[in-house]
Length: 126
Length: 110
Image (cartoon, rainbow over the protein chains, first blue to last red):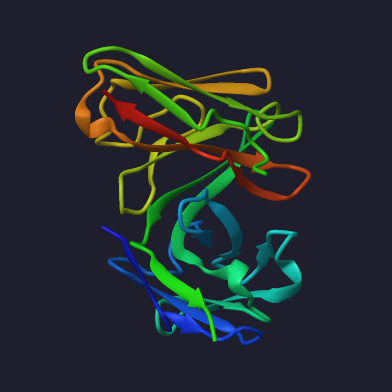
């Protein structure tokens, strides 16, 4: 079955850009109507959706982070990536990548993330 | 401050039934479906309930979900020690144009 694995630097300096990659194995990132997501979780706190990208390359982001976030797709490597600019200590968190599925049924919008990576810890510190 | 509101904690003894609530609004739960995620200590979240009350393959039928108006609930019956985890409700928010989460409920099995 499909598995996701996050990778990237565990330490980023304040004001720099955080860059993470999610490698998809066990299936093609291009197959099916899936959304590829990034979610983060500060230590001891809840989950926060960062953004997602569709297999077409169309992306949308959490409004609270939109000015600093870019999510991109690399189908040749079966990967998708996250870039978060101008980081501060508040961006310290475990970052997860996840595969999502969504659409409409009987006028209700459904959206869930059914495959998750194990997460990677990113600390913002000088 | 999370968009969806959950109690921070819940507890019950083994074998009993526990319910966790999730309160939203007319831009999320009121008009879209609800999901629940389980996060065991030190691990990534996993999908527990989707589309209000559907269970992914492998999830025991001890777990059930329901929705009414702008609120939703997760019920766990026949509580077991391995159910001790954080539980998050989530759903699509039309105003934010993205998925939103509750703050999470830490379930303790006494």
